Image (tube, rainbow, N blue to C red; front, side, top):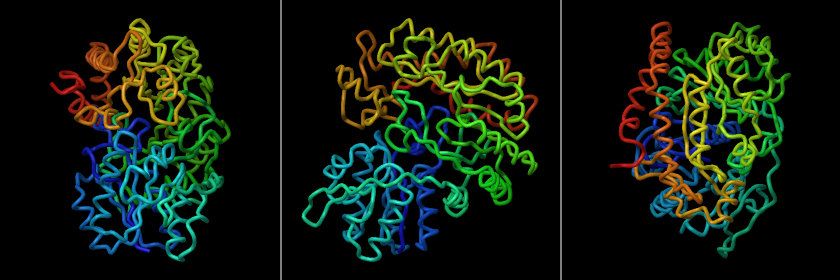
Length: 487
């Protein structure tokens, strides 16, 4: 079949597949990684695939309609997110108004949690995939091609001929990740890597996963709770290194790779296996990973990772208050955070620190402690977000149960320019207080003389870092001046 995978039009540079979907202040724009992975599976199954990333390409619905007509598209797979879901369903309806026989399957975290609500909110959407959808899409396409009953497609929620909603048996988790095609092969076929930018990484950067799942239960974290689950599944070291080799050959301009695993260093055997294989193959491409600050405190281990190419770790420190950390089930010992920073410095590994305010036992004092922690740790880069609560997470349910959630209008998850917008009012803190504190913290952090001197030194000694710092400065400076809300 001729099938189109669509990251639908919305705000330009809107990242649907981010853990917290929005337009970012750093100009970061995520690859449509999950959508591309499913497209690769469909190609492997013999389908004629096309892919559009509308936010990255700055194209509108008319462009999509023209492409559907030109490519004679017979099936459409559409991504979604909570902040964009109203728009995403409208895009589906506009497309099917033009092509009334076109079957559409919506995928992503929001519809995984609220499939029936999403189906009822659209005039034309008939199919929704639950959670990881690589093989659900493949099986849905096979049912369309063969005329088999949709009741046979595991992981599907759908409207039958009578308009009634049916929920099929859940799909099994994919245990053998090595059988999936390289997502970078799909990037090569459809995307320009220069269109994607990550504020913490040299540009151009490519992202892929070496594992799926996360065993931790942080109350705010959406992917493990709503999409990929808590069971760990790993690619083999040789399979990961093979993708490095593919990228080196096919993307000579790439300056770094980012592993988008929820938490990379969980299995020491997995991580050391990849490091040893990259060293054996003489890898020269730096890579970045997501990581907790309290799992492994072994200098020799981190030096080996550095030798294999590890450049930077993205760490969710989240809060400077022990009680807030306990409430969000992060359970991070703050002393461990300081030890981790020192370990990274000794290993020559950079750190991007993630800090968050607005957790459900937050006060002005605990927010200030979080900023104080960031200033003390001094990671290479830092992000300050209000707590973003998404359906299906424990944080969302608690906010709703306690009456802290101020709206269920999904559009309100963003400001009018597509930036993050808190949707909770705490007893002594409004949603605007949370967003404005993040603006304040960002301004204090990035204008501190110690930070500016350190960044100047970094820029003078490494051209890739100079380019990254300059792009980041140009993107961030306007928000340091005016903040998140339009004036």
